[in-house]
Image (cartoon, rainbow, N blue to C red; front, side, top):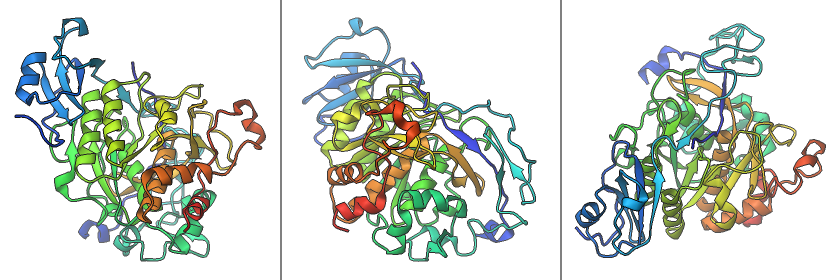
Length: 453
């Protein structure tokens, strides 16, 4: 059982100038310790007054996390061999159940029509479908010259002459979802909202995130079991950079938010049920308002479902990727969200509002957003472009943050995003997917208007 939220990295990048080089019984919900790859995760519903130690002894497991509604333990052995405390239980396989699948061609190959040129006069294509120019003429300063203001409070002008100044390559994409109207009028920035990024980690030193990350006391690496959720590895190898890009998309759309980095996937893009479920509970307990899941599994996972239910009960909303196999039917947990009004399952369209060839679809899909060639920060102070429903999902997470930052609840904002979506049924290439593309494509301008802003 592996997940396939496929993402394709296109373009790698540019070194910055010297400027940047300088620059007992549990009465309240809590996350206990994480475990190192148990065979399975046992979900004990309604654990009642049993202490952590009692649960561990009764089930011969190690507590991962618990809330008043459920407890998760790392266990070994078949479900039939597990004793019960009288509460209902479920068992999920744990190791590498969640995954972000790599794009094609395979990792390490270079494709495209141009030559490698880190400083312009050329183009770079890693795993991509064509060449991508890099700012050109040796221009460096992508994240420099006052980048703190650009990515911090949103007080510095993000748009000039109808161009998105921090990342001009995204101008058309942001206009497609109405971001130019939202930001130029200063209608919403997401201020006061925290978005948790459950992914491969984030490049914690990237200048794009100066002033945007939550307090380090809220950070957690559930893979390495430490407090430094760094996006590890080399860009272009495995899925390194995936979480950095996801966080950067949110930063561009909602520059007033705080980003909470939580590492649940390793460098190859795979992660355990114990990591994902514990991270959801952690995010809720440490102040997250929105949770972004640019990942998925092939089948429902009880532990994660319980964790998401806990998040919703606390007013926290979740956006999850539909998946990238291009087939009918969504990855989990996105496939469950049509019956969970606080959460959104997200697919991808191209610049013409045609369903992306890789995007999964179906009756459970709720919303679409652009997911092809989206630029964002990459490790080592670089810029890169990725494709996948992993990129569409943070656009929706950012949209949730914008609405909630204006005082709407998560459920109200989720409803506005879907009801105000731009219809894509009339796009001829979408005809084969009638009734299976959700409400349409994300329209931030219309959604904020529906919320009275």
